[in-house]
Length: 298
Image (cartoon, rainbow, N blue to C red; front, top):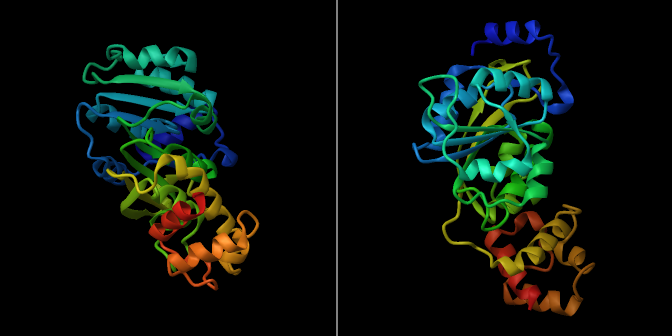
């Protein structure tokens, strides 16, 4: 879908895009193909797309994947997508049976993939449904206003997708790719990287979107770790340490953690792990946070 086609379609349907919903639609064909290439989609793959908009990425996904589930919040766009791809919107109650059933034929003869369209708030759906996405891949131009919480929600635990390829703000992308002692390193970095390895990323210029966003954008590729770094029963401790440690970035981490653990236990754990009591959270590696979680949970 070209920019001209996108403008014409929106005008014809009298659709005014909403900034609060993060509606900046990617129209550049080269960038869309780069995103799909990063996902390395095979015919048997199941794809979760959040925020399909007018469907330019959806179309490419349907050409390669065996199954696509798209979640769209805007009812006006849901109506258009139903017409474009010859399908009907689903509700969450009917979705389980649909995903387990045979591929749903669409109106276009060259598209044999199963396509399911859900009219829902994606973040609310993910929190509410708690589905197993471990056999799925996320490939999406995420709404920028909720991109971070969506990734954190999807990434946590053994039900996470095996791959996440997402377009989001460049600032958020840098946080996802960051390493210790980087000013972009923080809570988001650790909550995602505990389960996912950052593989690759590339920038996308603002003019590739309509309307052009006021911020730079990037596509990131995150791969689920084959071997978990953290036992699932320690996740709550890990999250508490990370959030407390970065609650005041310029303060020493040990002092901040005293809100939740006895000083004696903290001092002993820091000494055993050879972490300076004056260290700040941004200096600790992911592996050190994992080791600290193990020490403080005992």
